[in-house]
Length: 130
Image (tube, rainbow, N blue to C red; front, side):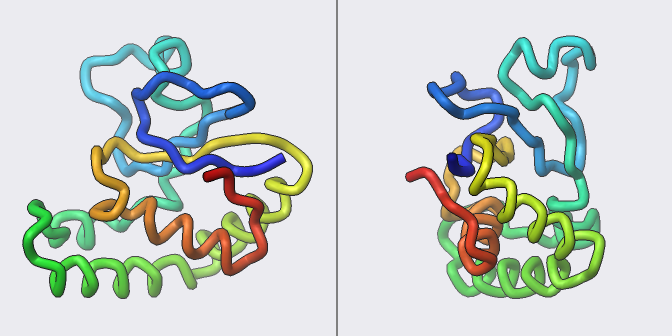
């Protein structure tokens, strides 16, 4: 049992289980009834995505590592709020009993909030599938 960190919309892997979308907005142009069928997500968890303000300030390129470091620091601060922190604790505990995935649309995990989610889940004792 473990949590997988995935790119939403990518093909599902064996033993991935339920896919949680940790994004602020649903996929554009996709009917709600098709989210799971098209490998976006089964359950939407916007509480684990950056706030709209932080998202607007997120670096758009991979070149500015200082900007990415600042983004990650601010996102970690947002994850300390109870509504996100309790959810991360629950997901970390679930990772010991069931397979599931959390994900975002970004192509490069290292320049995406899901890298921070991976770190935060690990810090809470989650089992992470590589």
